Every structure is written in C-alpha cells, then in structure tokens.
Image (cartoon, rainbow, N blue to C red; front, side, top):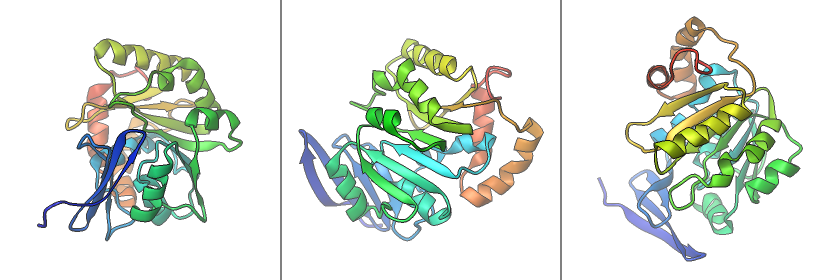
Length: 257
C-alpha cells in the first residue's frame, strides 16, 4: 500500500483545506486530521466511510427517497453515491464554502448537473427560501468539531420540518461537548418532531446521529427485520449492524422504535 499523498491544499478564512490520496482512496480534511469526505476512485456507487453510510441509516424506517437535500456537502461523496447508485433520485447539495465547492467538483466528482444541483448558500437561508419538498434531509455541519447551536434551535428545525414530505425525515450529525448538551439538543429535536426520533451511536466516533421523522413509522418491527437483507444489498450498507445498535440506544416506545 502506498503512503498517503497530499495532492492539493488551499487556505480559506484561515482554515487549511487539504485533499489526500492513498491508492484508490481520496479524502478531504480541514487541517485537523479528521476525514470530512472520502471516495473510492474506482467505485462511484459506494461510500467507503462508515460514518457517511450511517448518516443514511434512517431510511430503515421509510420508503426509498425521491428527493434529497444535503447540507454541509464537503467533498460531495454522498451526492456522488446517490447520483451513481440511484440515478433517478433528485437532490440539492448546499455548501457555504466556495473553496470546498470547487474541490468537490474538481477532486471528488461531485455531481452538479442532471438530477443534482450543487449550491453555494448558507443552509439557514436556504431552508427559508426553498420551494422543494424532501423525503430526506442530511444535516452534517460542524464548527470547531461541534454542532453549531443554531442547528438545534427550534426555529431552524421547524423550517427543516416544513421542507419534508409527509413521510420524510432528517438525519442530524450531533456533536456536543457533554451529556447535558446532548440531552438538551435531543429534547429540542424531539419536541419539534413530536418525539418521532431514533438515535444511533457510532463506536468509532464521538458523534451521535439523530433521525427525526415527519410522522410515525409505517413499518412494523417484523417488516423492518425482514427488509434488512434486501436493504443491505440495494444500498451496500451494514443495515443489520445499524438496527441492532439502534435497539440498544433507544428504549422501546421512546420514538420510532
């Protein structure tokens, strides 16, 4: 295996943004050695980073999405995955940084034509002005390795919920400083979404993913368990592992589960 090679670096607003490559893997990091985006150059329809796969784990409880909003696009690996594995899905990828948008297009094959739009905007403005409705919103935004406070405020979450279709849901990457911060953020999410939530902890990350749904799950536990094998084949995700961890993380009757 070759050594990791720095293939591009740029500084934007005092932040160093680097693109690395090792064999067929290419990734993006913001000067903190944390992988923000990773792609397999030989497999456009696969997500090599387990965290990115887990962010989409909430589809366990819904039907296949038809339109997706990605907020905090990074290199655009998830948009690339959707465009190649599920080409009929439409989507918008919203990213604030112009430098990151250029890197996403030049180094990570992020789709910006056809069924996908790559948009430079502040997601706080976008959710207010957007005319689309989404089956899935993926909210993966961190500032100084923590979820910004505005992202888990009631008003912003209400705007997000207003963009969801009847059976839609939002996936939030929640990174907080302590248990008190987590409980406070989760309480706000559950309040806005009428307690229709499920959490997923990741053993290799400090993140906790929260999926919040516009309505109660329409599938029984038996139906979900029977669908795991097919979902794993279709999405190329470890849905069985996700579901077993969800059962551990969420008390029965506490939300979707």
